[in-house]
Image 1 (cartoon, one colour):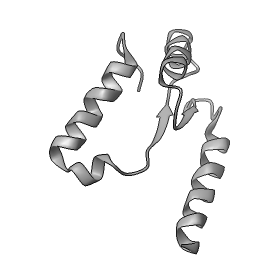
Image 2 (cartoon, helix red, strand yellow):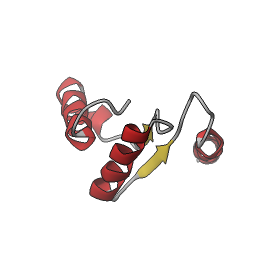
Image 3 (spheres, one colour):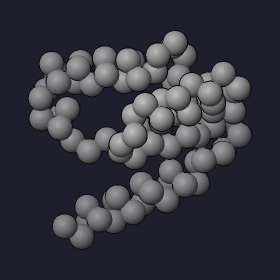
Image 4 (cartoon, rainbow, N blue to C red):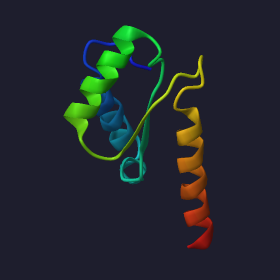
Length: 86
């Protein structure tokens, strides 16, 4: 959920916590889902996050409206399918 002034800093903070808890967990593939993008302020912050981050799998969704959820589900299906085949 994007509810802070600097979501990228919040992302790094969570990942540092993961690394402290279990370094192997912090190395796993990540999918970043930015929710509540139906809200104007959150959508702007999500766009800023994406511009700063510039890597990985990032999805902007609105659970309330369903916007972006289909693309996320399709991506997750492909990932699960790839894992089943390997």
